[in-house]
Image 1 (cartoon, helix red, strand yellow):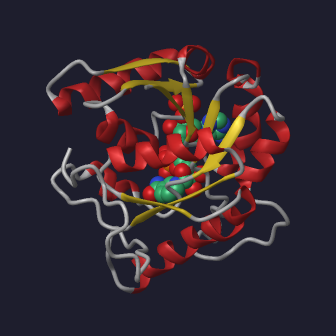
Image 2: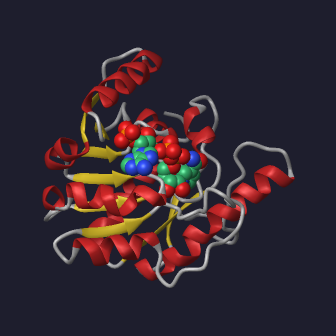
Image 3: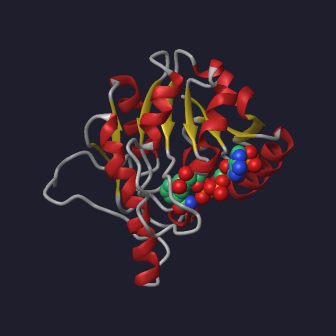
Length: 224
Ligand SMILES: NC(=O)c1ccc[n+]([C@@H]2O[C@H](COP(=O)([O-])OP(=O)(O)OC[C@H]3O[C@@H](n4cnc5c(N)ncnc54)[C@H](OP(=O)(O)O)[C@@H]3O)[C@@H](O)[C@H]2O)c1
């Protein structure tokens, strides 16, 4: 699968790139192609192989089958605006958790989730799924750590949902469908809870796991 990680130079996007690079064709996107090239080179160094390339967000989105959006909520609309045409006919997996940088451990008041806003802004030509909001970047970057916690996937489109489930399993996580895109309001709201838990219990990557589903799909191998 050809994947563009928009804002992939950041903490969460680079972690996903590290986890996917051995299995999928990964391009990191950035507002500045040189920055994407530099961060890609650093990640390739860690992987010991030239697997990830860098490009502008627009170029990366244009070349991809599936785009993954990993930018702060403050940059969400502007980044979507930059790549809107390039995403037509494709799947977008939105990882955005709209936390308030001034109060990241508090739930914000909002009518729609960021993922619903993305779907509304991009229109029906793009199929949006929400996923990975409950997976900490520290866990993604720790390649020796087993992928604990569930990736919760919401979408109104089967192709977007299936792509997100596949990519979550590629990272070694158990991936669960949790319903339509409007349920992203709940999933995105779990990120401030995780930030609170990390602070309260002095840990780095608290996660959520659903009980009572023993026997349901496990990750495709919990190692990369
Ligand atoms: N960090 C986590 O553990 C975690 C976990 C779950 C979900 N998330 C969600 O994932 C998203 C990304 O989180 P992150 O921690 O990876 O963020 P980040 O490292 O702060 O930023 C990611 C990238 O977004 C771009 N960006 C930053 N500010 C921007 C701006 N004002 N305008 C346009 N682009 C901007 C930058 O890319 P360029 O400069 O290269 O363009 C940056 O490298 C957030 O919505 C976050 O809530 C994060």
